[in-house]
Length: 371
Image 1 (cartoon, rainbow, N blue to C red):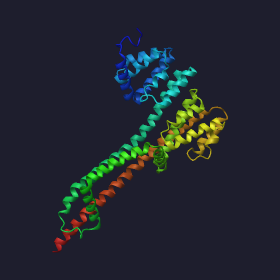
Image 2: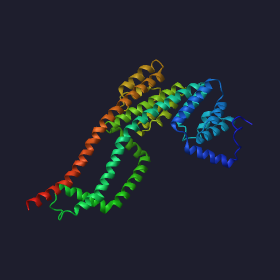
Image 3: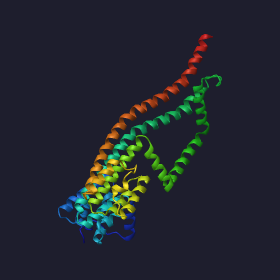
C-alpha cells in the first residue's frame, strides 16, 4: 500500500466523486495556498519527490478541506499525472495563472524555484488587495450607518413631527422637502426595496455580458482617484504575473494569454490580448504598447530598453515593485482624504435635517411668545 493511502480508507467511486466535488467548491484560502507552495518548494529543494512531499503535507494538515485536496492530488500523482494536471481539477483553489506557471516549472525542471516565486507573487498581490479593502471598509461602514439612520428618520421621526404642525403649506422649504421625502419612503417603501433588488439583479446580469463588463470596467478606470488606483493595481498585477511566467519559462504568447485573464479588468484584458497578434507578427512589446494610454510612458520605455538586452522578465519585475509602491502611497493618501470627506458629508446631512426640523419649531415658538 502506498504512503498516501496508509492512513486513509479506500473510497468507492461514488464517494470519490462527492469528495472531489466538495473540495472543488470550497478551495484553499490565499494564506493557506502561500504556505503550501512554500513548504512544497522547500521539500522539493531538499530532494524529496513531489508525491512524498504531498504525502507529508497531507498527513500533518489539520484543515479538512485542504487535507482532502492534498489527498486527491496525491492519488492522482500516483496515477502518473503531473502536479499541474492535478491542480486543474480544483479551479476554486488554483487559478489558471498559477497552474500555467507550475506547468512551465515542470517543463524546465525548476519546480522548486517556481513554487517559491509563485508564493511570493501571490502574497504580494494579496497584500495589496487587502490594503485596498482595508481602506474601503471604513467609508462603506459609515455609509451603511448613514443609510439606516436616514431610513429611521424618514419612516419614524419625521411622520411624528408632522403631527405637531397644523398646515404643511406654511412650513419652510427645507422642512417641506424633508416631509416629502418621508411621505415617499412611507408610501412606497415596498416598491423601493423591490426596485433596489431588481436593479441589483439586472445590473449583475448586465455586468456579465461582454458589452456590460467592458462598459463598467471602463467607467471604473475613469473615476477620479479610484480609477487611477485601480489602474496602478492592474499594472502591478500584470507586471508581476507576466514577469513570473517569463522567468518560469512560459512563452511570451502563452504568458500574455494567461495574464490577460488575471488582470480583472475587461478593458485591459482586450488590450493585452491584442499583444498576442502583435507578437506573432514579430512586433516588440514596447513598440505595440507605445502611445497607448492604458500603459504609462515610463513602463513602455523600460520595456523597450530591456527588450534589447533580453532581460524583460527582470525589468517587468522591477516595474511591478514600482507600482506596488505607487499603490501603497495612493492607499495611504486615500485613507487621509476619505476621513475628512466623510466627516463633511455627514455634517451636511446632519445640518440639513437639523435645519429642516428645528426651523419650524423655532418659528412656532416665536409665534406662541408673540401671542
